Image (cartoon, rainbow, N blue to C red; front, side):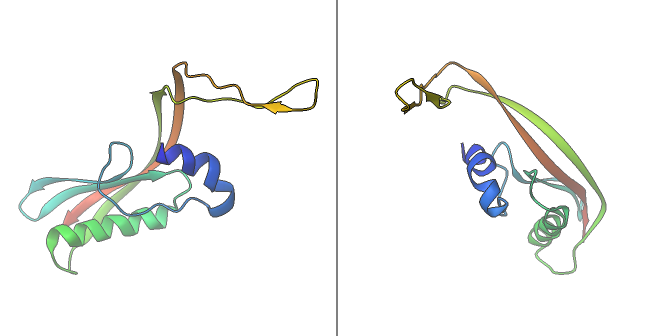
Amino acid sequence: MKIILCSILLLPLTGCISRYHAWDGTTGYQDERLHEGVYQVSYTAEQSTRWSWLDQYLVRRCREIAKTEQANVMDVRHETETVVAMSSVPIGAPIMTPADSVIMPASSAPHEVVFNLKKAEGRCSF
């Protein structure tokens, strides 16, 4: 729901700034230890998030894991993803009646919601 509001309601006004956070099932950082001192780190965010911000989030996560400012992120890759989820949140579209009044019929039938996301991924070493 948070992403839908961001994409539909706030994007025209604010650009929808992504905030740094752990993985919530759709966006955020993830990491996996490959071996001593080396991790795979990634950050997924809304499509409007700048690649430079995602790269900074990778560095931030790497430094958090390493507990030092000397950590490095290498082999950074960027990709875009389209995620489709099912929702039953009521939706409606305005309808003009002959009396010039607007009504918003709600439908709670299951429907697809499409999210366009950006993902940056790299190797963290320290």
